[in-house]
Length: 439
Image (cartoon, rainbow, N blue to C red; front, side, top):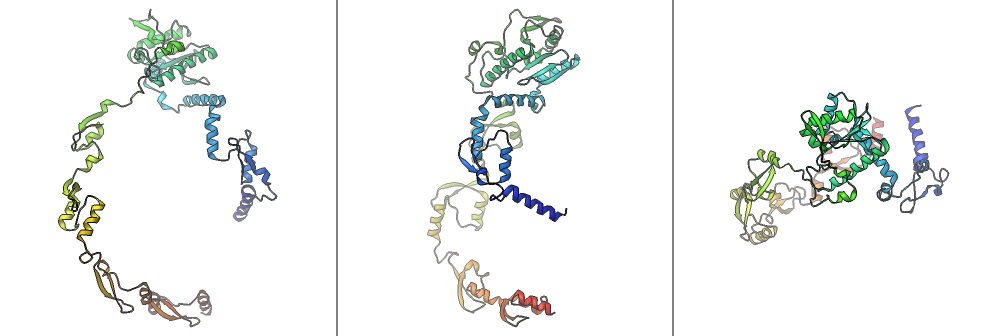
């Protein structure tokens, strides 16, 4: 098949499938649908789209993008089916390592301990609705690394002060219950404070957890301590927040603080504005790059400006140096504080007699030799009294080289004919073609 035949075939397919001849290809009744959200009837123009809609299993169709978005927000996203699939999708994302922030410093330290012990493990192990930080593949055991802030270590936070901590504690409770019921595994919880400050305790606790095949009296690392080289369980065993019941946990929730500030105070510096003296702060990296420091762009504008009084009302104002230099050199006649003052000043100081805007110069038209007046600033440019004279003066007479008809042509074309740059000039395309055939 040639390229032309292929293009013709494609055009025929497009005419049939995307636009269609509705009289015999697809009746109008088959192209009318009811919106799945608002119920309004609408017509689908393309038979190709009609076929695609009918192929779908759900048969959902919407009259507009707004209806589709509203259905997704109010109906589909609130269904248990969507929530269930969303949880599975989140776990798959974690399992595939698409979220890099989950691999924190405490997590890396625990991984190093497991590697040094020769224990094989898998990060972000997929448990359908939840992901486990470390799954010990040979022993069928699980370890969770608990961050101080996010999982709310009771040694640091005597109360649960932030809403994201409340949400995470509830999620930890849900995960623990799910793993116990579906996998029959007791998770070992190793806390960030112990990982950073007491790695020996963490190492010994993992050994005890593996050697006892996951059977421990308590599974929270903060309830253990090291004495010499031995690991002991504290007599005063304390539960973590997620191990408490809902009513007990409510006693510790105190949401007075809005959220955790992520501002790193050691990277900021306080200083006084060089213009107004107001105290403000800035990133130290930005502060060190600048020679001068201001609190705002408004204050920065005053740098390099000088005092001047409005020529109309006398109001004091600050102006850039280059404008003041224009006044001193005579390039600029006046400076005013506002547009209104500028108009008043010009009306009072510039009359029609002395203003260059109204001064006129007498000139002679190059075409008709009539006298005319032009504004002073156009005296060197103006040559004609009107557009008619301008066009007339730049035109010349000529007879068609084929039929001899008299016509008017531009002077530039006449010069090209006289210099030989242009051979012929005809009154029409027909005459031009006929002249070529004669030659």
